[in-house]
Amino acid sequence: AVKYQCYDSYDSTHLRHYSRWNTKASCVAANGTWLYNRTVLETLNVDFAGCMNLTGNASWGKVFEGGVDTCYVLPPPVECRAANWSRVNHLGNGRDGQPLSYKWR
View 1 (cartoon, helix red, strand yellow):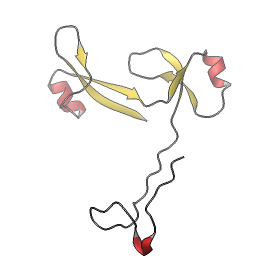
View 2 (tube, one colour):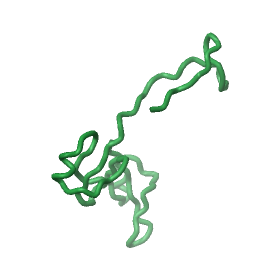
View 3 (cartoon, helix red, strand yellow):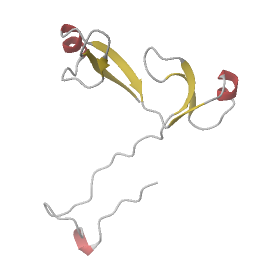
């Protein structure tokens, strides 16, 4: 996934990656720089041909704006689902006395 964020300069030569500006318009209005970062599991030290021969979630491109092209592994899609029913502020059993759990993969 690609995430854009505002980079503020805190002096004439350094940028900080956290900012209170969370839209491109507000970032630019505050003289910030609006850049992207890509969420990756890892980067691989292979050339373009080697990257294209890999199976799975390997891709070729820039991990962050202004960076160099490299081979990287994308994370798997996020599983997003509603939580099982539980009483408010209770970390125990759900409906019918079954323990609430999630199987991480």
